[in-house]
Image (cartoon, rainbow over all chains, first blue to last red; front, side):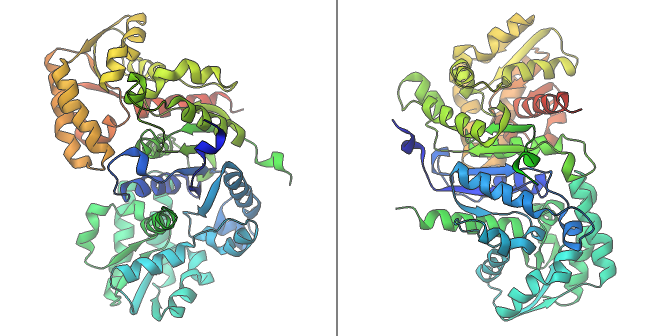
Length: 242
Length: 242
Protein backbone atom coordinates (compact mmCIF):
# COMPACT_ATOMS: atom_id res chain seq x y z
CA UNK A 1 0.00 0.00 0.00
CA UNK A 2 1.45 3.36 -0.99
CA UNK A 3 0.32 6.90 -0.33
CA UNK A 4 -1.84 7.17 -3.46
CA UNK A 5 -4.06 4.52 -1.89
CA UNK A 6 -5.36 7.20 0.45
CA UNK A 7 -6.08 9.82 -2.19
CA UNK A 8 -9.69 10.66 -2.79
CA UNK A 9 -12.21 13.30 -3.70
CA UNK A 10 -11.85 15.24 -0.45
CA UNK A 11 -14.14 18.14 0.31
CA UNK A 12 -12.34 21.00 2.05
CA UNK A 13 -14.46 22.98 4.50
CA UNK A 14 -13.26 26.46 5.45
CA UNK A 15 -15.00 26.72 8.80
CA UNK A 16 -14.45 28.63 12.01
CA UNK A 17 -16.78 31.46 10.94
CA UNK A 18 -18.30 30.69 13.44
CA UNK A 19 -16.84 27.44 14.73
CA UNK A 20 -20.30 25.99 15.44
CA UNK A 21 -21.46 26.64 11.87
CA UNK A 22 -18.40 24.71 10.62
CA UNK A 23 -19.14 21.79 12.95
CA UNK A 24 -22.85 21.76 12.12
CA UNK A 25 -22.06 21.88 8.40
CA UNK A 26 -20.06 18.64 8.86
CA UNK A 27 -22.91 17.11 10.81
CA UNK A 28 -25.53 18.03 8.21
CA UNK A 29 -23.27 16.76 5.41
CA UNK A 30 -23.23 13.36 7.09
CA UNK A 31 -26.95 13.47 8.00
CA UNK A 32 -27.95 14.32 4.43
CA UNK A 33 -25.82 11.49 2.99
CA UNK A 34 -27.99 8.43 2.64
CA UNK A 35 -25.47 5.64 3.07
CA UNK A 36 -25.56 2.14 4.50
CA UNK A 37 -22.05 2.33 6.02
CA UNK A 38 -19.34 4.78 7.10
CA UNK A 39 -17.24 4.08 4.04
CA UNK A 40 -19.65 5.65 1.48
CA UNK A 41 -19.67 9.07 3.14
CA UNK A 42 -17.86 12.10 1.69
CA UNK A 43 -14.21 12.30 2.76
CA UNK A 44 -13.88 15.79 4.18
CA UNK A 45 -11.39 18.03 5.95
CA UNK A 46 -12.64 20.84 8.18
CA UNK A 47 -10.30 23.76 8.83
CA UNK A 48 -12.05 25.25 11.86
CA UNK A 49 -9.90 28.23 12.79
CA UNK A 50 -12.13 30.54 14.83
CA UNK A 51 -9.42 33.21 15.04
CA UNK A 52 -10.40 34.68 11.65
CA UNK A 53 -11.18 38.31 12.51
CA UNK A 54 -14.83 39.40 12.58
CA UNK A 55 -16.12 39.57 9.01
CA UNK A 56 -18.59 42.48 9.23
CA UNK A 57 -16.05 44.65 11.10
CA UNK A 58 -13.34 43.69 8.61
CA UNK A 59 -15.49 44.56 5.64
CA UNK A 60 -16.42 47.90 7.17
CA UNK A 61 -12.73 48.65 7.75
CA UNK A 62 -13.35 49.01 11.49
CA UNK A 63 -11.46 45.79 12.37
CA UNK A 64 -8.56 43.66 11.11
CA UNK A 65 -8.82 42.17 7.62
CA UNK A 66 -10.05 38.55 7.70
CA UNK A 67 -9.00 37.85 4.09
CA UNK A 68 -5.39 36.74 4.82
CA UNK A 69 -6.74 34.30 7.43
CA UNK A 70 -9.27 32.88 5.01
CA UNK A 71 -6.60 32.57 2.29
CA UNK A 72 -4.39 30.72 4.77
CA UNK A 73 -7.22 28.25 5.45
CA UNK A 74 -7.83 27.74 1.72
CA UNK A 75 -4.16 27.08 1.15
CA UNK A 76 -3.96 24.62 4.08
CA UNK A 77 -7.03 22.72 2.84
CA UNK A 78 -5.69 22.50 -0.71
CA UNK A 79 -2.29 21.37 0.52
CA UNK A 80 -3.99 18.67 2.62
CA UNK A 81 -5.70 17.34 -0.50
CA UNK A 82 -9.07 19.10 -0.93
CA UNK A 83 -10.46 18.80 -4.48
CA UNK A 84 -13.28 21.32 -3.91
CA UNK A 85 -14.02 23.81 -1.16
CA UNK A 86 -17.04 25.15 0.67
CA UNK A 87 -17.24 28.04 3.13
CA UNK A 88 -20.11 27.68 5.63
CA UNK A 89 -20.26 31.42 6.32
CA UNK A 90 -22.36 33.75 4.18
CA UNK A 91 -20.53 36.96 5.12
CA UNK A 92 -17.22 35.38 4.10
CA UNK A 93 -18.64 35.17 0.57
CA UNK A 94 -18.17 38.95 0.28
CA UNK A 95 -14.53 37.92 -0.38
CA UNK A 96 -15.52 35.04 -2.70
CA UNK A 97 -13.81 36.47 -5.82
CA UNK A 98 -10.49 37.00 -4.03
CA UNK A 99 -10.61 33.53 -2.45
CA UNK A 100 -11.56 31.83 -5.72
CA UNK A 101 -8.72 33.65 -7.47
CA UNK A 102 -6.24 32.41 -4.83
CA UNK A 103 -6.64 28.72 -5.74
CA UNK A 104 -7.09 26.33 -8.66
CA UNK A 105 -9.61 24.34 -6.64
CA UNK A 106 -13.29 25.21 -7.21
CA UNK A 107 -15.17 26.88 -4.35
CA UNK A 108 -18.89 26.02 -4.35
CA UNK A 109 -20.77 29.32 -3.83
CA UNK A 110 -23.26 29.38 -0.95
CA UNK A 111 -25.68 31.71 -2.78
CA UNK A 112 -25.82 29.42 -5.82
CA UNK A 113 -26.44 26.51 -3.43
CA UNK A 114 -29.39 28.40 -1.91
CA UNK A 115 -30.84 29.23 -5.36
CA UNK A 116 -30.54 25.54 -6.30
CA UNK A 117 -32.29 24.63 -3.05
CA UNK A 118 -35.17 27.06 -3.70
CA UNK A 119 -35.68 25.47 -7.12
CA UNK A 120 -35.55 21.95 -5.75
CA UNK A 121 -38.26 23.01 -3.29
CA UNK A 122 -40.40 24.15 -6.25
CA UNK A 123 -39.86 27.90 -5.70
CA UNK A 124 -38.85 29.09 -9.18
CA UNK A 125 -40.16 32.65 -9.02
CA UNK A 126 -41.71 35.16 -6.59
CA UNK A 127 -40.83 37.04 -3.45
CA UNK A 128 -37.91 35.73 -1.39
CA UNK A 129 -37.37 37.07 2.13
CA UNK A 130 -33.77 37.46 3.24
CA UNK A 131 -32.25 37.12 6.69
CA UNK A 132 -28.55 37.55 7.38
CA UNK A 133 -25.99 39.93 8.82
CA UNK A 134 -26.59 43.63 8.12
CA UNK A 135 -23.33 43.59 6.15
CA UNK A 136 -24.33 40.86 3.68
CA UNK A 137 -27.77 42.42 3.22
CA UNK A 138 -26.36 45.92 2.65
CA UNK A 139 -23.78 44.59 0.20
CA UNK A 140 -26.48 42.72 -1.75
CA UNK A 141 -24.80 39.29 -1.54
CA UNK A 142 -28.11 37.52 -2.16
CA UNK A 143 -30.13 40.26 -3.88
CA UNK A 144 -28.09 40.36 -7.09
CA UNK A 145 -28.09 36.61 -7.57
CA UNK A 146 -31.79 36.25 -6.76
CA UNK A 147 -32.73 39.00 -9.23
CA UNK A 148 -30.52 37.39 -11.88
CA UNK A 149 -32.55 34.19 -11.39
CA UNK A 150 -35.89 36.03 -11.66
CA UNK A 151 -36.76 36.29 -7.97
CA UNK A 152 -37.79 39.44 -6.10
CA UNK A 153 -35.72 39.86 -2.90
CA UNK A 154 -37.62 41.14 0.13
CA UNK A 155 -35.85 42.74 3.09
CA UNK A 156 -37.02 43.48 6.61
CA UNK A 157 -36.66 47.04 7.93
CA UNK A 158 -33.23 47.78 9.39
CA UNK A 159 -34.48 47.80 12.98
CA UNK A 160 -35.45 44.12 12.70
CA UNK A 161 -32.14 43.13 11.05
CA UNK A 162 -30.10 45.08 13.59
CA UNK A 163 -32.45 44.03 16.41
CA UNK A 164 -33.79 40.45 16.63
CA UNK A 165 -31.90 39.08 13.60
CA UNK A 166 -28.49 40.26 14.87
CA UNK A 167 -29.45 39.21 18.41
CA UNK A 168 -30.25 35.69 17.28
CA UNK A 169 -26.91 35.36 15.45
CA UNK A 170 -25.04 36.65 18.49
CA UNK A 171 -26.86 34.26 20.85
CA UNK A 172 -25.90 31.29 18.64
CA UNK A 173 -22.28 32.44 18.69
CA UNK A 174 -22.57 32.41 22.50
CA UNK A 175 -23.97 28.83 22.45
CA UNK A 176 -27.35 30.14 23.71
CA UNK A 177 -29.34 28.19 21.11
CA UNK A 178 -32.63 28.02 23.02
CA UNK A 179 -32.59 31.81 23.55
CA UNK A 180 -31.83 32.36 19.85
CA UNK A 181 -35.09 30.70 18.74
CA UNK A 182 -37.51 33.48 19.65
CA UNK A 183 -35.78 36.42 17.87
CA UNK A 184 -35.16 34.26 14.76
CA UNK A 185 -38.82 33.19 14.76
CA UNK A 186 -39.87 36.82 15.08
CA UNK A 187 -37.91 37.70 11.90
CA UNK A 188 -39.31 34.76 9.91
CA UNK A 189 -42.84 35.70 10.98
CA UNK A 190 -42.29 39.35 9.99
CA UNK A 191 -41.18 38.20 6.51
CA UNK A 192 -44.16 35.88 6.21
CA UNK A 193 -46.44 38.88 6.82
CA UNK A 194 -44.75 40.53 3.82
CA UNK A 195 -46.19 37.65 1.77
CA UNK A 196 -42.93 36.07 0.72
CA UNK A 197 -42.85 32.69 -1.06
CA UNK A 198 -39.80 31.57 0.91
CA UNK A 199 -37.30 32.77 3.50
CA UNK A 200 -33.51 32.41 3.11
CA UNK A 201 -31.64 31.73 6.35
CA UNK A 202 -28.70 33.57 4.83
CA UNK A 203 -26.33 33.50 7.77
CA UNK A 204 -24.99 30.11 8.90
CA UNK A 205 -25.84 30.88 12.52
CA UNK A 206 -29.58 31.20 11.77
CA UNK A 207 -30.22 27.50 10.97
CA UNK A 208 -28.76 26.77 14.43
CA UNK A 209 -31.31 29.12 15.99
CA UNK A 210 -34.21 27.33 14.25
CA UNK A 211 -33.93 23.56 14.89
CA UNK A 212 -35.45 21.45 12.11
CA UNK A 213 -38.32 20.23 14.30
CA UNK A 214 -39.48 23.84 14.90
CA UNK A 215 -39.61 24.75 11.23
CA UNK A 216 -42.92 23.27 10.13
CA UNK A 217 -44.71 25.52 12.65
CA UNK A 218 -43.30 28.61 10.89
CA UNK A 219 -45.62 27.88 7.97
CA UNK A 220 -43.36 29.22 5.23
CA UNK A 221 -40.81 27.58 2.92
CA UNK A 222 -37.36 27.99 4.47
CA UNK A 223 -34.06 27.54 2.73
CA UNK A 224 -31.21 26.86 5.07
CA UNK A 225 -27.81 27.99 3.80
CA UNK A 226 -25.98 25.22 5.72
CA UNK A 227 -28.17 22.42 4.33
CA UNK A 228 -28.14 23.95 0.84
CA UNK A 229 -24.35 24.05 0.86
CA UNK A 230 -24.14 20.47 2.19
CA UNK A 231 -26.43 19.30 -0.63
CA UNK A 232 -24.30 21.15 -3.18
CA UNK A 233 -21.21 19.43 -1.74
CA UNK A 234 -22.91 16.03 -2.00
CA UNK A 235 -23.83 16.70 -5.63
CA UNK A 236 -20.23 17.70 -6.35
CA UNK A 237 -18.93 14.53 -4.67
CA UNK A 238 -21.34 12.23 -6.44
CA UNK A 239 -20.76 13.85 -9.84
CA UNK A 240 -17.20 12.56 -9.63
CA UNK A 241 -18.07 9.02 -8.53
CA UNK A 242 -17.83 6.32 -11.15
CA UNK B 1 1.78 39.62 7.79
CA UNK B 2 3.75 36.41 7.31
CA UNK B 3 2.78 32.77 7.65
CA UNK B 4 3.81 32.47 11.30
CA UNK B 5 0.96 34.89 12.07
CA UNK B 6 -1.46 32.03 11.45
CA UNK B 7 0.29 29.46 13.61
CA UNK B 8 -1.51 28.35 16.71
CA UNK B 9 -2.22 25.58 19.13
CA UNK B 10 -4.33 23.56 16.68
CA UNK B 11 -6.16 20.46 17.83
CA UNK B 12 -6.09 17.68 15.23
CA UNK B 13 -9.17 15.46 15.18
CA UNK B 14 -8.84 12.06 13.53
CA UNK B 15 -12.49 11.54 12.65
CA UNK B 16 -14.45 9.58 10.09
CA UNK B 17 -14.91 6.61 12.45
CA UNK B 18 -17.82 7.17 11.98
CA UNK B 19 -18.13 10.47 10.19
CA UNK B 20 -21.01 11.62 12.41
CA UNK B 21 -19.00 11.01 15.59
CA UNK B 22 -16.23 13.22 14.13
CA UNK B 23 -18.71 15.98 13.29
CA UNK B 24 -20.46 15.76 16.66
CA UNK B 25 -17.11 15.83 18.46
CA UNK B 26 -16.42 19.19 16.76
CA UNK B 27 -19.87 20.43 17.72
CA UNK B 28 -19.50 19.40 21.36
CA UNK B 29 -16.02 20.94 21.51
CA UNK B 30 -17.54 24.28 20.50
CA UNK B 31 -20.61 23.84 22.74
CA UNK B 32 -18.48 23.04 25.80
CA UNK B 33 -16.24 26.08 25.21
CA UNK B 34 -17.60 28.97 27.20
CA UNK B 35 -16.53 31.91 25.10
CA UNK B 36 -17.94 35.37 24.37
CA UNK B 37 -16.82 35.39 20.70
CA UNK B 38 -15.70 33.12 17.86
CA UNK B 39 -12.07 34.10 18.27
CA UNK B 40 -11.57 32.44 21.71
CA UNK B 41 -12.57 28.96 20.54
CA UNK B 42 -10.07 26.13 19.98
CA UNK B 43 -8.51 26.19 16.49
CA UNK B 44 -9.11 22.69 15.19
CA UNK B 45 -8.67 20.57 12.08
CA UNK B 46 -10.96 17.61 11.49
CA UNK B 47 -9.71 14.86 9.18
CA UNK B 48 -13.02 13.13 8.50
CA UNK B 49 -12.10 10.29 6.14
CA UNK B 50 -14.92 7.74 6.44
CA UNK B 51 -13.14 5.28 4.14
CA UNK B 52 -11.08 3.87 7.04
CA UNK B 53 -11.95 0.15 6.95
CA UNK B 54 -14.27 -1.21 9.62
CA UNK B 55 -12.38 -1.35 12.93
CA UNK B 56 -13.91 -4.46 14.56
CA UNK B 57 -13.52 -6.49 11.32
CA UNK B 58 -9.96 -5.23 10.90
CA UNK B 59 -9.02 -6.16 14.44
CA UNK B 60 -10.52 -9.62 14.03
CA UNK B 61 -8.52 -10.09 10.81
CA UNK B 62 -11.74 -10.63 8.85
CA UNK B 63 -11.44 -7.32 6.96
CA UNK B 64 -8.78 -4.92 5.66
CA UNK B 65 -6.41 -3.33 8.17
CA UNK B 66 -7.56 0.18 9.19
CA UNK B 67 -4.18 1.10 10.76
CA UNK B 68 -2.49 2.44 7.57
CA UNK B 69 -5.54 4.67 6.99
CA UNK B 70 -5.43 5.98 10.54
CA UNK B 71 -1.67 6.60 10.30
CA UNK B 72 -2.28 8.52 7.06
CA UNK B 73 -4.82 10.73 8.86
CA UNK B 74 -2.42 11.33 11.76
CA UNK B 75 0.33 12.30 9.36
CA UNK B 76 -1.95 14.67 7.40
CA UNK B 77 -3.13 16.36 10.61
CA UNK B 78 0.41 16.79 11.90
CA UNK B 79 1.59 18.16 8.55
CA UNK B 80 -1.34 20.63 8.60
CA UNK B 81 -0.17 21.95 11.97
CA UNK B 82 -1.87 19.94 14.74
CA UNK B 83 -0.09 20.26 18.10
CA UNK B 84 -2.14 17.51 19.80
CA UNK B 85 -4.50 14.87 18.48
CA UNK B 86 -7.75 13.25 19.55
CA UNK B 87 -9.52 10.26 18.00
CA UNK B 88 -13.30 10.32 18.58
CA UNK B 89 -13.63 6.54 18.10
CA UNK B 90 -13.18 4.14 20.99
CA UNK B 91 -12.47 1.05 18.88
CA UNK B 92 -9.67 2.91 17.07
CA UNK B 93 -7.93 3.13 20.46
CA UNK B 94 -7.11 -0.58 20.14
CA UNK B 95 -4.34 0.75 17.85
CA UNK B 96 -3.43 3.61 20.21
CA UNK B 97 0.13 2.45 20.88
CA UNK B 98 0.96 2.11 17.18
CA UNK B 99 -0.59 5.50 16.37
CA UNK B 100 1.16 7.23 19.27
CA UNK B 101 4.46 5.68 18.17
CA UNK B 102 3.95 7.04 14.64
CA UNK B 103 4.09 10.72 15.66
CA UNK B 104 5.86 13.16 17.99
CA UNK B 105 2.55 14.88 18.66
CA UNK B 106 0.66 13.76 21.81
CA UNK B 107 -2.59 11.84 21.31
CA UNK B 108 -5.06 12.41 24.16
CA UNK B 109 -6.40 8.95 25.13
CA UNK B 110 -10.19 8.62 25.17
CA UNK B 111 -10.18 6.16 28.11
CA UNK B 112 -8.14 8.54 30.26
CA UNK B 113 -10.59 11.30 29.29
CA UNK B 114 -13.49 9.13 30.48
CA UNK B 115 -11.74 8.31 33.77
CA UNK B 116 -11.12 12.04 34.31
CA UNK B 117 -14.79 12.70 33.56
CA UNK B 118 -15.96 10.07 36.08
CA UNK B 119 -13.80 11.73 38.74
CA UNK B 120 -15.04 15.20 37.89
CA UNK B 121 -18.59 13.85 38.32
CA UNK B 122 -17.63 12.65 41.81
CA UNK B 123 -17.40 8.94 40.93
CA UNK B 124 -14.03 7.95 42.35
CA UNK B 125 -14.70 4.29 43.12
CA UNK B 126 -17.34 1.60 42.65
CA UNK B 127 -19.04 -0.33 39.86
CA UNK B 128 -18.82 1.14 36.36
CA UNK B 129 -21.05 -0.28 33.61
CA UNK B 130 -19.52 -0.43 30.15
CA UNK B 131 -21.19 -0.08 26.77
CA UNK B 132 -19.31 -0.25 23.49
CA UNK B 133 -18.57 -2.47 20.53
CA UNK B 134 -18.14 -6.18 21.31
CA UNK B 135 -14.54 -5.83 20.10
CA UNK B 136 -13.53 -3.10 22.56
CA UNK B 137 -15.27 -4.90 25.42
CA UNK B 138 -13.65 -8.27 24.60
CA UNK B 139 -10.23 -6.65 24.28
CA UNK B 140 -10.64 -4.91 27.64
CA UNK B 141 -9.97 -1.38 26.37
CA UNK B 142 -11.77 0.15 29.36
CA UNK B 143 -11.56 -2.67 31.89
CA UNK B 144 -7.80 -2.50 32.41
CA UNK B 145 -7.73 1.26 32.86
CA UNK B 146 -10.75 1.28 35.17
CA UNK B 147 -9.26 -1.44 37.37
CA UNK B 148 -5.95 0.42 37.48
CA UNK B 149 -7.88 3.43 38.84
CA UNK B 150 -9.68 1.36 41.48
CA UNK B 151 -13.04 0.89 39.73
CA UNK B 152 -14.87 -2.40 39.18
CA UNK B 153 -15.92 -2.75 35.52
CA UNK B 154 -19.37 -4.29 34.95
CA UNK B 155 -20.35 -5.86 31.62
CA UNK B 156 -23.72 -6.81 30.22
CA UNK B 157 -24.22 -10.36 28.97
CA UNK B 158 -23.07 -10.90 25.37
CA UNK B 159 -26.59 -11.13 24.00
CA UNK B 160 -27.29 -7.52 25.05
CA UNK B 161 -23.99 -6.23 23.64
CA UNK B 162 -24.43 -8.10 20.37
CA UNK B 163 -28.18 -7.34 20.35
CA UNK B 164 -29.49 -3.90 21.35
CA UNK B 165 -26.07 -2.26 21.94
CA UNK B 166 -24.76 -3.22 18.48
CA UNK B 167 -28.15 -2.38 16.94
CA UNK B 168 -28.08 1.11 18.44
CA UNK B 169 -24.56 1.75 17.11
CA UNK B 170 -25.56 0.51 13.65
CA UNK B 171 -28.71 2.67 13.59
CA UNK B 172 -26.66 5.78 14.40
CA UNK B 173 -24.26 4.91 11.57
CA UNK B 174 -27.34 4.79 9.32
CA UNK B 175 -28.49 8.25 10.54
CA UNK B 176 -31.52 6.64 12.26
CA UNK B 177 -31.00 8.51 15.52
CA UNK B 178 -34.57 8.37 16.81
CA UNK B 179 -34.65 4.58 16.30
CA UNK B 180 -31.32 4.21 18.09
CA UNK B 181 -32.69 5.65 21.34
CA UNK B 182 -34.72 2.65 22.51
CA UNK B 183 -32.04 -0.06 22.23
CA UNK B 184 -29.46 2.24 23.85
CA UNK B 185 -31.88 3.04 26.67
CA UNK B 186 -32.52 -0.69 27.14
CA UNK B 187 -28.78 -1.28 27.67
CA UNK B 188 -28.38 1.61 30.13
CA UNK B 189 -31.40 0.35 32.09
CA UNK B 190 -30.01 -3.19 32.18
CA UNK B 191 -26.74 -1.86 33.62
CA UNK B 192 -28.61 0.24 36.18
CA UNK B 193 -30.31 -2.96 37.40
CA UNK B 194 -26.81 -4.35 37.99
CA UNK B 195 -26.39 -1.54 40.54
CA UNK B 196 -23.62 0.32 38.80
CA UNK B 197 -22.48 3.75 40.00
CA UNK B 198 -22.10 5.07 36.45
CA UNK B 199 -22.37 3.97 32.82
CA UNK B 200 -19.66 4.63 30.23
CA UNK B 201 -20.97 5.35 26.72
CA UNK B 202 -17.78 3.77 25.40
CA UNK B 203 -18.48 3.94 21.69
CA UNK B 204 -18.73 7.38 20.06
CA UNK B 205 -21.99 6.43 18.34
CA UNK B 206 -23.80 5.84 21.66
CA UNK B 207 -23.89 9.51 22.81
CA UNK B 208 -25.64 10.23 19.48
CA UNK B 209 -28.30 7.63 20.32
CA UNK B 210 -28.97 9.23 23.70
CA UNK B 211 -29.58 12.98 23.23
CA UNK B 212 -28.61 15.07 26.24
CA UNK B 213 -32.23 15.99 27.08
CA UNK B 214 -33.14 12.29 27.43
CA UNK B 215 -30.36 11.49 29.86
CA UNK B 216 -31.78 12.77 33.16
CA UNK B 217 -34.67 10.29 32.81
CA UNK B 218 -32.19 7.38 32.76
CA UNK B 219 -31.51 8.03 36.46
CA UNK B 220 -27.87 6.95 36.45
CA UNK B 221 -24.60 8.88 36.07
CA UNK B 222 -23.51 8.70 32.43
CA UNK B 223 -20.09 9.45 31.06
CA UNK B 224 -20.08 10.28 27.40
CA UNK B 225 -16.84 9.46 25.60
CA UNK B 226 -17.35 12.30 23.06
CA UNK B 227 -17.92 14.96 25.73
CA UNK B 228 -15.13 13.57 27.91
CA UNK B 229 -12.69 13.77 25.00
CA UNK B 230 -13.85 17.29 24.11
CA UNK B 231 -13.29 18.38 27.73
CA UNK B 232 -9.81 16.79 27.70
CA UNK B 233 -9.04 18.69 24.48
CA UNK B 234 -10.21 21.95 26.06
CA UNK B 235 -7.99 21.34 29.11
CA UNK B 236 -5.05 20.66 26.78
CA UNK B 237 -5.74 23.86 24.82
CA UNK B 238 -6.12 26.03 27.89
CA UNK B 239 -3.04 24.57 29.59
CA UNK B 240 -0.99 26.14 26.80
CA UNK B 241 -2.67 29.56 26.89
CA UNK B 242 -0.72 32.35 28.49
